[in-house]
Length: 203
Image (cartoon, rainbow, N blue to C red; front, top):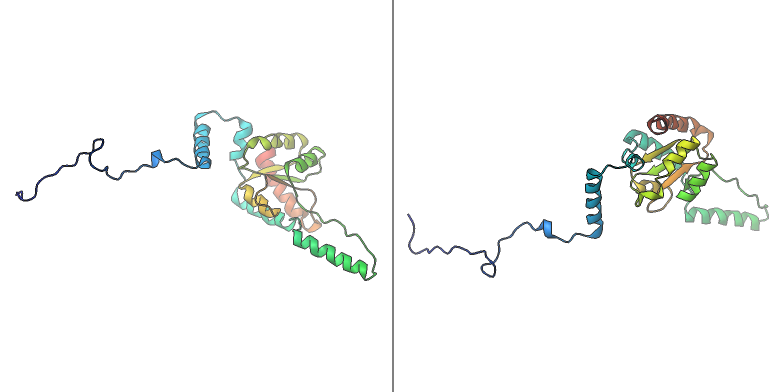
């Protein structure tokens, strides 16, 4: 039964009439530029045929091997600014005390940066090259896997430029390389290199 005291007042949602109901306007949001770019990139990757040289950056190292690799690489992180300061202070104090200045042997550390690593690969001095998968623009490192294969240097692609950056005390890092390792880690590195060669170099 309809109550005659309550009158029907249907809303009119045409232009300049009643206030519009709340709708989901996500489609019309002006998103930040980086979000727009990453969405467009995903669509392009799906729609276009991606060249193999670029597509290989989607095939990163599996988690277990990556963890082992990062654990080993962390041992060879270069010294921080504070550590360098302390080392030089200790050396200066020794010199001031008249104990003679004996220059220390340079410890084996990771080498970072595209130019440094490229030179090492060309001279066949790199034992293992680690490249980040999310480099923007990818043209910076797209030639490196081919160069490593040509020179017979083992290389791998790992998830996250921030993880590589953490190894060398920076925010991000595109590429790092092992030049030398201590004798106790040689077997661990050889195992990793063997796994990486089958996954990347021998494909």
